[in-house]
Structures are given as structure tokens and as C-alpha cells.
Length: 207
Image (cartoon, rainbow, N blue to C red; front, side):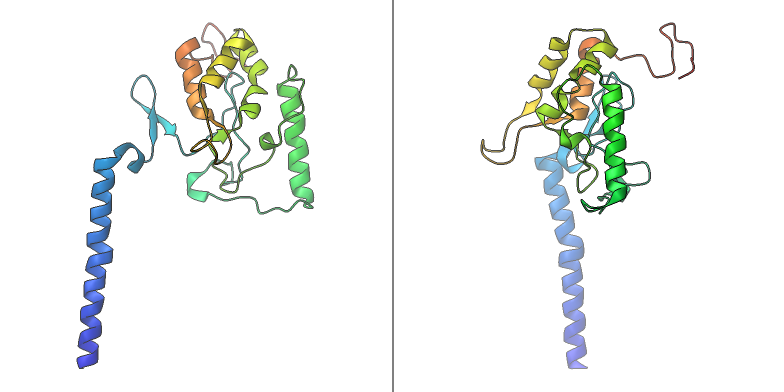
């Protein structure tokens, strides 16, 4: 009984310390010191509506927007509740077929891009939610963006270059660009593009 009493007390103390006090203290400190990060790094548009998170990629089908890396997270990709890779190896025929299909699609959607397709645009990240591309992966898409928005490519390139995040401490990692932040910057500077399936007069049309 003495041993059981000691074990019970220890269990209660441990539960209170690690299950209640520690989470409350850490959560409170996070809300005070960096509330934006603690609440998911949520990004809002000019109306104050949440449009996504700086930490989680999302798909863009409109040709006027930059596209992120492909995603194997969830059935349709970019599912934050199903983060993960495809787990397909380099010898997998399924992976090779998927990459070949993506290559054909990217070349068809970006006929003005003369350089080879960057590898990151056909390879999914381990999480399937990587919100960043390299500057090269972004700049490769510039001609399509410029054509879809009816502006000069140099203007789109300037927006991309203004959003390049350098290496951490100048030595760790590689320069990156957040796809969602650049797409929002394009909307702020050049206006939102016409939604797919809508005419310039606002009428629905066939795709």
C-alpha cells in the first residue's frame, strides 16, 4: 500500500506538472511573445479575411498565380490534416508516370518558358505542404504570370525578387520564396485576375 500510495502521488504530480501547468505556461508565453506564430502564422487579405498560412502550401489553378510544388498530402494534395510524402522510390513506375504527366502539363501551360523545368516543380516535399520555392522555380513561371495578367514580365520578376528570403544567418539553407505571399503581392499591385470560367464582363463561360 505504501508503494502504491507513492506511485499514485507521483502520477498525480506528474500529470499536473506536465499535463496542465507546463502546457498553460508555454501557451501563455507563446501568446505574449509571438502570438502570430503561435496562432498558425495566418495570412489575411486586404479585407482582413484569412486566406491561408505562411507555413502551409496551397494549390493554385489560375494561370495568373504562381504554382507551388506538387503535393502528396491527402487525396487532392495540400491537405494539412494528412501531411506526408508519397513514399514512392526513384524506381517506382507510378512516380515516373506522375512526373512525366506533370512535365507535359507544365510545358503546355508555360510555352514561353525556354529553360528546363526546375526539378522542384515536379517533385513533392516530404510533408507535401512546403510553402516555398527556390527563386529559380518562381522565375521559371514568370512568363505565364505576365501573360495571364497582361503586364510586362519584368514587373512580375520585380515582385518575386522583392520576396526572396536569404539563407538563415547568411549560411544555412538556400534562398526561398513563399508562393502565397508573392501571389498576394501580385493581387495588391496589379489587381486580382479574372476567375477561371468567367468572362471579362463577369459572365460564366465554358472552360
